[in-house]
Length: 128
Image (cartoon, rainbow, N blue to C red; front, side, top):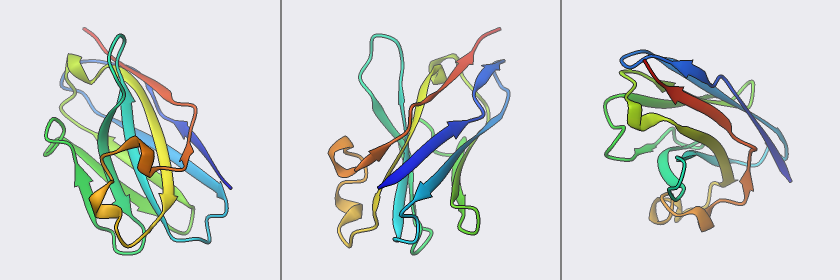
């Protein structure tokens, strides 16, 4: 089992920045792949970004590419999402998700079913 706890959300202004953190505990000695997902009110949960701990390979949704950066600190078993140039449309609950870094992760990183563990989420609100 892997437990995930997100932090860092809050109320931000358009154009601002925020960094979300996801602390993983439990079976983190297993090589993991972790992703960030978000769900806006009335919308389906959507993929934001993912990273493979084994290689550092990253994946991004087109809507955040160039604005968001996913990274991790292996020594702290923590994944980060640096969010810059925030837009109103970035308002959502952001969820951290994780799965064993399987060889075929690149084929399903954008699918919810590819992740075995989920955090409780942290709210990010972009408002002026």
